[in-house]
Amino acid sequence: PSGSIPVHADLAPGPAAQRLKELGWVYLDDGFLRSAEGGAPYCRERFEGDYETLASAITDFVVEALERHPASLRRLSSSSEGVQCQVFASAGALEHRGPLLVLIPGITCRAGLWSRSLCAADGLGR
Image (tube, rainbow, N blue to C red; front, side):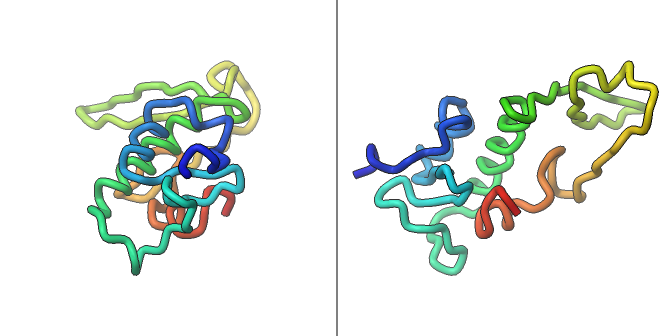
């Protein structure tokens, strides 16, 4: 039964987690994507749904997770000369005078996400 699957406690309450669940998927405490019905691990070769819909939901899930504990990042809006991007920063980052670490995602990914397919197949911890 779906009620017995140990959904990742820190991330479960958000709208992105709900969207994933509506699509039939949940992230468990171990960080792996599993079927909401029975807990079978995600496998792209056996996945029968619309991959772009699932990948979009995974992206939203990861972005939402960045704003929650333990990362607790703040989403900042940035635009310059008509180009918009999402930036996530830790508390005090804009006032910090020391080194700044900037992570730039790939062309098709949003901030905080290196690869949607890796998040689905290899879990959130890799």
